[in-house]
Length: 357
Ligand SMILES: Nc1ncnc2c1ncn2[C@@H]1O[C@H](COP(=O)(O)OP(=O)(O)OP(=O)(O)O)[C@@H](O)[C@H]1O
Ligand SMILES: [Mg+2]
Image 1 (tube, rainbow, N blue to C red):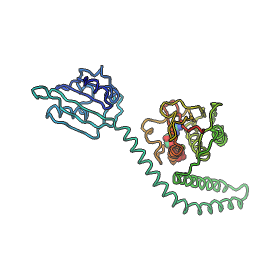
Image 2 (image 1 turned 135 degrees about the vertical axis):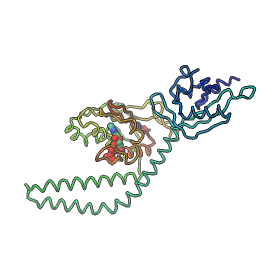
Image 3 (image 1 turned 135 degrees about the horizontal axis):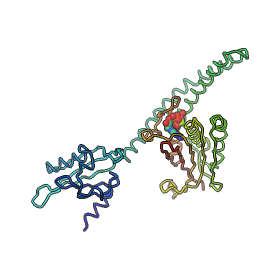
Image 4 (image 1 turned 90 degrees about the vertical axis):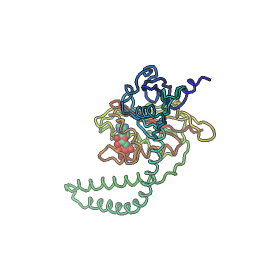
């Protein structure tokens, strides 16, 4: 049996060093995890490859010195571009025939997927808590707000047409409406199970959203481009919820281009290897992609991991609920949402939705 090929094929990264910490083995998973090739690491000292105080270096060092195994359930590994990945590390000594320590091996497991799942669970919990709070609040706040709104409108009618106080009533109304919108959004998070999917024409939904956006777009010198696939099959979805998703995405795109630009709405049948077909029980189902593209500044890497978290916002007047709601609605549709963005090159948000059949 060829043990080297067994090690090479392991999904965990395996790194072996001799007693002077020179690399003697570096499998494919190690190449992928560390983003350093086996060819370039072979024979080199581990302290030149990683920082001398990196966890993996320290643990292997200890194992060589003591002949004992070491483990670190949660360490950080630095990639050549200085990004870090969470990993677990286990080391073990390699003994020569005379039972002297002649080397050591480290097994590193990538924890980022687990961290991502944990973040999803936390996000779900925050959503549920926000939702519960909203239901209580909404009741208490909506009625007095309704009264305030009515009173302000009456006040506006009593004012002389040329009164400078009209400006104040206008501000009052916009702000009352804003608070109402906040409550509506929180309530949306609170009633998660309310999707009723029926066959829908995605283009009609997009056109409803486009209609709502056209005026703002004109004001901000944003041109709206449509790139629709004319033979797009009907999707299976809940009309109101999906309009809400597209509206949130389009609003984000508009807000990302204060100096104008092009906002593109695109559709196509998905060929994505991961999301292009999804099994919801009853066999794989084809998916459609609905995309909103902007030419804004893009989303910086630090923000990327948090944009779906409820209440994460970088905007002065943002709530940080738009994308959290989109994520939730797409999950309820058994679809997916994906964001591609490079600083300076705009943002593309892709919604994957099941084809009706
Ligand atoms: N198209 C985009 N371009 C650049 N950044 C974006 C884009 N879409 C979202 N973001 C970033 O993600 C954050 C979260 O977006 P999200 O829609 O959830 O909340 P928001 O827009 O800040 O507030 P709101 O609740 O009003 O939607 C934004 O604050 C922004 O930093
Ligand atoms: Mg938003």
